[in-house]
Length: 261
Image 1 (spheres, rainbow, N blue to C red):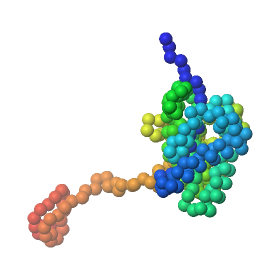
Image 2: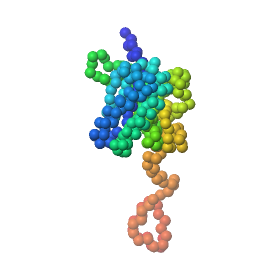
Image 3: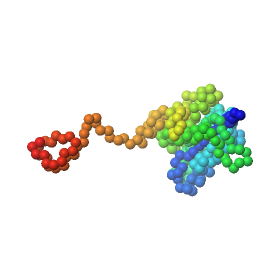
Image 4: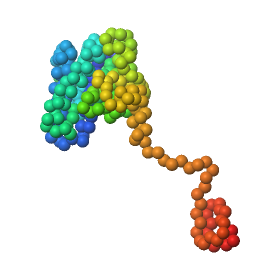
């Protein structure tokens, strides 16, 4: 008997930038705020049904994940992320009253594919499948991280990673009102995953405006790389031990006294 293909599900995962650098008490507050801002953004986008009927919703410690019916993908791509940027901006205004060091800036990953869902009546909230793994991998990709690294933390609160499948099925096919020209492709190589991610930034700022999205990952890698000095081809480093009078022409190591060259 042939195995049946699991149902196709849309997958959304978010995580908070710099979560681990906060004290424990602050981490608790941020973790509790994430589902709150997600729910409010879905409601404002006219997608309250997606949030209320979310499949396998679960916290990830520094973020949150859920699945939903793929038929909502065009609306999520077209409206949800812009609303989420607005909700995060409002929440930041509240956070800065308490302490400017506390911020809530999110990376979001959106994917679609076959998913093995938790069996009804079980305690597991985890979905299984390569689509699930890819969704989480995209969050950690250098181009996605670079968006928040290279933008104004008081303006850009959200970096979105759309998978290749979401781009082809939703944007390139023009089911979404978000134009395909507003996302930027970037190569992704993280662990076992190799592919293309499509970056969307609802409110770009800082170096994102100055340099554009295409070079985020390369520029970030260049600034963090440690450059080792490279010897000039054909050069040799030698050691002389002893007293030298006159001119010494040396190959390798020379030991003892050298007189008269």
